[in-house]
Image (tube, rainbow, N blue to C red):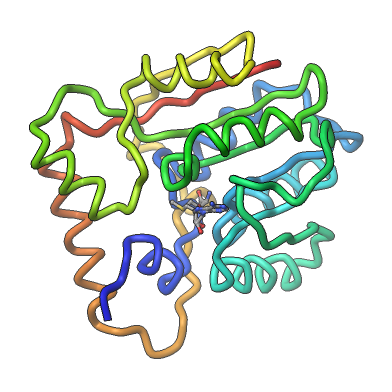
Length: 237
Ligand SMILES: C[S@@+](CC[C@H](N)C(=O)[O-])C[C@H]1O[C@@H](n2cnc3c(N)ncnc32)[C@H](O)[C@@H]1O
């Protein structure tokens, strides 16, 4: 069987599967005004590391959504093991199963690039309240690249498109986000502490091909280290 990069993440149950991990998530959230009255959507929650952190730290209502059943099972296990009342929803960011203007904040960490980008962005805008905030951490193309290499990356990661910072900015503005701030972060490995570490929730009987994907990911990360970067987009309506 041919596995995708996302199959690999779900089989290994990687928590904090975005650049900067939980450490960056904490830093970003610490700049926001969050209290227990807020409704927050973790869109593409994976195994729910970020959702659990928000619910514990801010005591607010968190909804964790993902389209992958394996990821969601692992997220449910995490939440029930620490008795967090997080709402778990299976669904796609491209057609969110929520009414308009429901959330004060949407966090989307390394998710939009795996989806139809325009559909997802317009759905995020639809379900955000007036004055709501979208914080999206996304892969960006730092330099132009030969078509062949672009295709290799797109095919391997299963992303729909590889966009530059400017292209992301334009799409977010076009979708109706009036204020789009972009921040570039350096990954600070030395500051990574145990409580911010990537965690794993392994499935039973993991196929050895899954580990090949992991190895290939390491290889691409090194090979394209100057080509693939990431940005945090903070967007308001
Ligand atoms: C790289 S992982 C990031 C997971 C999590 N945000 C984190 O940082 O650990 C991407 C996640 O997006 C989810 N995903 C991909 N396409 C999706 C879609 N259309 N709707 C909802 N979730 C999606 C995947 O299932 C996966 O859990």
